[in-house]
Length: 116
Length: 165
Image 1: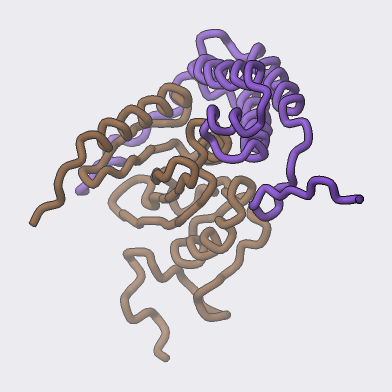
Image 2: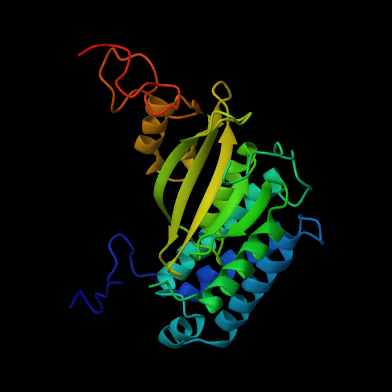
């Protein structure tokens, strides 16, 4: 018998992830590593570390995939992996853009007035 | 009849607006919530790509879908065109509006690198208003006739046009 367990996620284009805990562990450690380079008082670092540590602890304590999906409450585990990859690429881009600095330029005084 | 006020939703949107404004103080000039419970972020034009990428990729704000990209012409202002991006989050079922400004001659970064859907929307804004998008893969006319001159949706363009048909 070749096909022992042919599962699907039910979503087009998302293959079932084998060993999701390992993948998530790698991704979350990478994100935390990138976040270390951001200044400590930046709001982005504070909130993202909070989210990532929360999810990381859940991944470390819960070994059953189905229960982990329920606890994270964020769709399939493959979607959680995609979201972690997005967060990693965002963190790397944030290092270049540095959005925690003060405002670049004030708008002209009548710019956002409505009605004119 | 009057639409009932949804205080819970308004508070939730205000809280989220403050959250985003705290994370991106470099580009966000103002945050407002309309009386119909619509959140709007008012941005400096340099921050289009950072803000849109943040809204698309961050875990608390997965606004993966660009629903609309339009422009408004207010000729009396110094920066007459106001670009409006409408985003939808499927994970959290919520919408957000991102507004920027520019004038006729200043190019604006294209959102195509963030959302592929922005391609034709930006072509339409270029055709109808004359707002140039830098790094757009293929910026040409989309709705006007082939040899058409002028940008029809501007306020100084007459209703029946310059050429008799």
